[in-house]
Length: 418
Image (cartoon, rainbow, N blue to C red):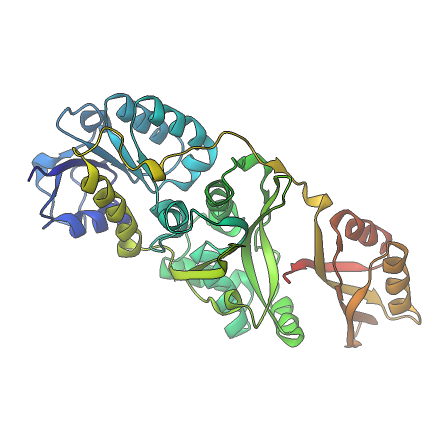
């Protein structure tokens, strides 16, 4: 049996996991690996003759059938992949940012050259999600996704909840443990999850979703006080990547913190675990959960894609038709101001007669009903700590309420999941 011959660009954590997993494969041969520094010490013993510091060596290598891209980022990854496609190679990638920003171009190019691009590892690490949506769930009309797609932020929020610690303290700990980067912006400001939900929504809804239309908000403003209050009200705070689409193809896609009810499975998805809740017809709702990152979980998805290509390679002129991009239209974006949500609002107000009534009156003037309102004591500076949870209302009206509470300090505004 002829082996599928692959080249790997990048030998970091995931690349090492892929190499270890495929070392004794019967039908896969690693021909070449591109790295930045050939002499760098790594966690795997790779023959020196297999390494190159020029990715174009393997991109243009005629003996390679599949290029596996594991370096991340848009450039130069896009150039490597597009050139590899033109050179007759299939692609496996874990690059969520590239797919979110230039995926349409890559998929169109791949179709032009009759090549397939697989990317199971780009969305939720080791959780199988893309292939199930494209195959087993293909007969469903999926209309809603709620997911925890970033292990770093989920770890931080879990530790804040369990330990009663501040965001700043837990972030330092996460960096020391290697769960957070030295510059954690991509994770804590929601960029990573936004890239992932962009592609996931595109696949699930069968409509292209543009990254520039995805609302994004990170976790840096979440306070330990918010964690404690959320628990009192029966919630956990999670960074949720969500997407919904209606019958008119209006897609509301966003990433932001949410108060999640404790009876929701996502509320109990803790530490670095990821989870994806999918709703549609006729399936109803299902949850897929597991490790969202790491050497072997992510390598599992990468290798799965490689084996999917190997199973059909040489047997057909048109590989994996169900896994190819077949989108012909773009979803209509819904602006965040036009969305309807419940809201948790933490307010510091002057301790004066009628202050709670004033908050209620302002909300009522916007037709906003209050689900809960709680005041706990009076501080030494004669201010009151007031917490409000609203019923569902339009985002732009909440902003108007906040503007009218000019004599109060708004500590936090967090949307509340149903």
